Amino acid sequence: MLIDRTRIRKLQDGQSEGEYVLYWMQASQRVEYNLALEFALDLANNHEQPLIVCFCIFPGFPEANLRSYYFMLQGLQEASNQLQNRKIRFVCSIGSPDKIVPAIAEKASFVVFDRGYTSTVQEWRSRVVRKLRAPVFVVEDNVVVPVSVASHKEEYSATTIRKKLMNQLSRYVKEIPQIETEVNALDISVKVEEVKVDDFKPLLKKLALDHSVSPTPVFHGGSKRANALLEEFIKNKLEQYHQWRNDPSKECQSSLSPYIHFGQVSPVFIALEVMKYPGDGTDAFIEELIVRRELAINFVHYNRNYDSIEALPKWAIFTLNEHISDKRPYLYPLKDLESAVTHDRYWNAAQTELLITGKMHNYMRMYWGKKIIEWTESPQSAFDTMIYLNNKYELDGRDPNSYAGVLWCFGKHDRPWKERPIFGKVRYMNSSGLERKFDIDSYVEHVQSTKH
Ligand SMILES: Cc1cc2nc3c(=O)[nH]c(=O)nc-3n(C[C@H](O)[C@H](O)[C@H](O)COP(=O)(O)OP(=O)(O)OC[C@H]3O[C@@H](n4cnc5c(N)ncnc54)[C@H](O)[C@@H]3O)c2cc1C
Image 1 (cartoon, rainbow, N blue to C red):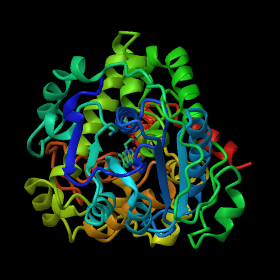
Image 2 (cartoon, rainbow, N blue to C red):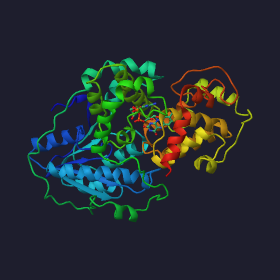
Image 3 (cartoon, rainbow, N blue to C red):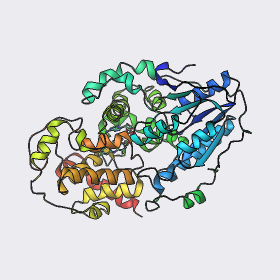
Image 4 (cartoon, protein in one colour):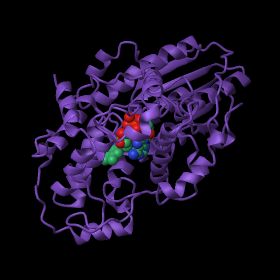
């Protein structure tokens, strides 16, 4: 097996006398460069058994809504066809994983999980594993460097984790060939109620979920689209990425974050493809894809308070509290922020971009967050507002990056700056910075044009 052993952990021993191997797909919703899938298939081949992949659609997933389910199901539709072509049985069922996975695993000789990092998916995994009798493995393949290999503790900033990650790249950025399926699994029956994902729109109508946020017209879910975006990015944007990635008027980002969030594309595969073209653009991109993203994962993995302002460094908590009574120039209720009707047309454009497309430009996310701190009554209400809007509308929301990104606005992974009202020593941003650095009007015009 070509998968590095540090990506694989045995969660429990057990009886391996079943009829098939089961892979519970959850965080890695893809068929290409899915190391959990390849590991499970290898196990199945070695035991001359078929492989079943199951996916649980759980309508009550915290903060998810029609927009996120729609994108996810577009991806699963594609994955289902690809698994069928590889003679692997795909079982999709509606309900809680701790009911569905154990029911299918009754006849499994081994069970394989992939790996997510937020508390919701960790708790699911612990609940499921307690109900299984077979040996269970977890394969960590949504990071380039496994989180506990990268570091044994919460890192302070990008500076402290960078070298630790970069030193491991030659070990973990590797091609993984697809394994041939030796036992056809397509005819196996299971004892759970299945749903077909080929035509998922009627299914979504029936599900008890928040239907108030519509699917995005801009992003189509699935690995094919992710691969096409990556190809286009390498061809047209990578070379200039270091110069223009921050400029909201240039569209120089890869737009891959929704696909990475749902596991529709592997970060290892992205790194492999991009690193074929060395240069300043590639270095800057690797800094974001690996250093910044895996710093966020390190944070969520090691800090139990990752979804709270308690997770801020002491200096940031202290300075924000010192300025908690400072007069705010504007105080907006949530509904005004949510519907993008503030006095600031740049901010409104960023929020409108989020409402319509499901993805706000990275630089505008920073500006957006900083202004929410300025326009709400306390750091706590600013934090609650940002997490609410981010996780409701961003396709890539509810991710380790969501918490690290929002908390960055309050000083996480940053350093103290010059003291000023409301922010204290937390970094400040203002609209004249946008005007000075970018053709910000063309960003506003571009967002306006997506409204029609
Ligand atoms: C307030 C705020 C909230 C944020 N919320 C999220 C979120 O919910 N989900 C999310 O994925 N990212 C979030 N980010 C980080 C960043 O804005 C997005 O990852 C980036 O805009 C995604 O666009 P892209 O894929 O086109 O990025 P690219 O510039 O093409 O970067 C490629 C990949 O690198 C990673 N990356 C890029 N920038 C960052 C960063 N600053 N921190 C960590 N990883 C990064 C992402 O995985 C991204 O897909 C947030 C940042 C801030 C300031």
